[in-house]
Structure formats: C-alpha cells, structure tokens
Image 1 (cartoon, rainbow, N blue to C red):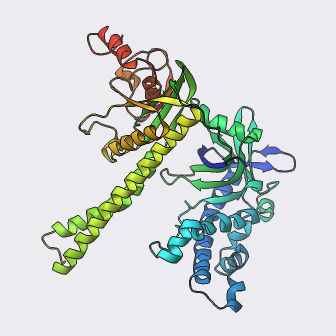
Image 2 (image 1 turned 90 degrees about the vertical axis):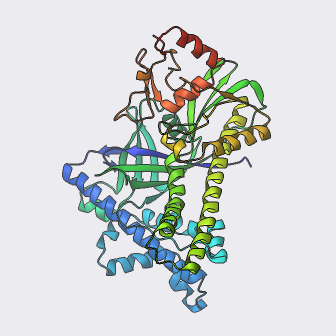
Length: 462
C-alpha cells in the first residue's frame, strides 16, 4: 500500500447560502435568513465547545479514575446523553444542530485528546492537563466527510457542509440544513485552486471539515478548513541541475521555488506558519518574563527558598523554549527536504543572513532564531546529498521575478502588508516571499542584480 499523507487546507469564507441537497441548487437567503445562519453558527460553535468539555471530563473519569464496570455504560462516548443534559440546561439550540455535526464533535473534538502520544502524556506521564475549550463562539464546528462537499460553480469554488437539522431548516424555511459558503481565493493563489481541483477530481480524498470564526477579525468573518489524504509523488534522483531557491520569509518561515535545467516551475510554496511558531514560543516566553520581573522587583515577596525555586523553574523554561524552537526549525527543514527529494533538487540556494538582526529586519526573524532554521536546513542538505549554497539577498525582495525590474516601490508599505509585492513596471503581483524565492533560484542572480544596479546611479534599475 502506498504511503498516505494528510494535509489541512485553510481558507476564507464568503457570505453563506442555502443548499438544496436534493435539487443540487443554491438558495439565496433573505437578510433575515442569513442573520439566522450567523446566529446559529455561533450557537453551534458554543455548544460544540461545551460538549467537548463535558465529554472530555467523562472520558477522564472513565479512563483514569477507573470507575466500576457497572457504571461504564453511563460514560460511553456519545453525544446523545450530553445532548439531553444540554437541553436540561436550557440550551434548546442543540436540536438545531445536525446529528452528523454532533457525532463528529465526539470523533474529532474528544477522541484525539486520549489517543496516541497525547493519551500517554495525559494518562501515564502526568505532564499534560485535561484540555478545556472556550465557549466564545470561536470553537471549530466539525463536519464529517459524507457531510462535506467541494464543488465548482461558475468559476468559483464552494464549501458545502451539513451543519443544521431538518427541524432548523423547516423553522427557517430552508430546503435542508446544508449551508454553502463561497471560498475566498486570491487571484494570484493558484495553489489553493489546484488543490480544490484535485479534491473534485478524486485525486485527494476528503476526510473531514471545520468551520470556525476568525478570532482576529470582528463581525461574521468565518474560516473553512478541510482535511484531505493523498498519495505523495515518489522521490526522484537528486540532480545538481535542479535548483531550489529558499527565502526566509517575512510572514512565513520559508518560501521555496524550483528551477529544472533553467526552466522555472510555475508554482512557489510557503513552508510553515510564522504566527503559529511565535504563538507557541510566546506561551513559554511570557512565563519567563513573569518570573524575571518577580525576581528583579525590589518589593518581591519571594524569600530565599522561593527565589531558588523560581530560578530553577526559569532555567527549565529556557531549556524548554530552546527545545520548542529547535523542534519547530527542524520540522521546517524536514518539509523543505521533502519537497527537494520529490522534485530531485540537488542544489539548494539560500539567502545569507546578516551578522546582526536589526529592528528593520522582518518581525519573524527578530522574534525567532533564524540561524536555527539555517542549521537545520544545512543538516537536511547533507542527509539528502544536496549542495547548499548561500546567496547575497540584496535586492532579491525588490526585484520582479517576471520582468527583472528592481525598485523599492515594488514593495509598497501600508494596508496591503509587508508580504505584498507588485511590480511598478509590468504589474506582476505575488506574495513577496514567493517572489524572492523565485529570484534566489535564478542562476547567476547575484551577478545579474549587480549588472542591473550598475546601470542606475541611485541604486535602483530604471
């Protein structure tokens, strides 16, 4: 059996529509109906979090406290008894949620916490707490594979999920409890569109879906996620003529682009999520800062014994922070190596970091340890048998990878964000890190840039 990998796709969602599951047709809701969809989505998110918390507590009692066998049946993993308890608490909205969503809440919201390494840490090692989930309307709403559809209609992709019950549909005059969300895809994002096409064509198998409110934005801004399984491309023989450019990104840990015999691949890809990495480090960092402040405070109530304990905890936290950062960097490097092996890239070109990380450097570099990523990539290159070369990154972020024009104006600052690239000459738009990776993968890019810059007295090509 061929190796199967799982992948999670995350994307923005537009205003919801109704979906006639029998007639396979969209239903354009009235403003009142759409308002009711949003209200029900928040209620479903809140109830899902409450169900997960209650089911987690029951599983903890059943698996850890070892209750007598006679009572085990009362603690079976099911949403049905929890549904009745929620109704007795006055949460009648639980009747509006489809059974598929409720059952998936158990399958995805609870079971993973007690499975595999998570379960071992929780049950055996004792270094992991029972998870609790917020009921502020940002908890994911889970959908089963048979309750999720991806379709293409009039050149636009839609995520269709069975969220609500027939009772809810009748009450709100919808033909069914299925809701259709238009997927927001940026014009330059060819990757996501290609991934959706693979799902529709059956190349990738849809496993489940999530709907969740975007906590970083106000109002009814929702995100969609689908988990897919697929058979990856087999590894190729390493060829030095196949070049992979690696840019340490502004908003993501790294961006990759590959050229084979001088011919550029159409795609460039991001690796990792910078914000997630910093959030993980931030949890430990905030505790380190709190302890340092308490130790330095002149009015600290800590006695000598408490100070020794605080210093010991501080030392352990710093070690833990280093381990977390090292592990995250190694995962990024492993992903880079995987892409290289599947494309046969035998020459890796990576930007050479400056000696000092200054205030004007990207926020991800200032708040992470980019040399950890470099060291991890160097180790992976040795394992793969690839040659790692370092390239002067000067002007690679300002140069248009399509027409070659170099200008500071290609990276406009402001509302469009630091990751926006738009060439002022040819109008080419791309993610700034992807554009830089395309430049780095270009053969002889350093000499090419020097030649272009020498034509202009003010340091920019005209």
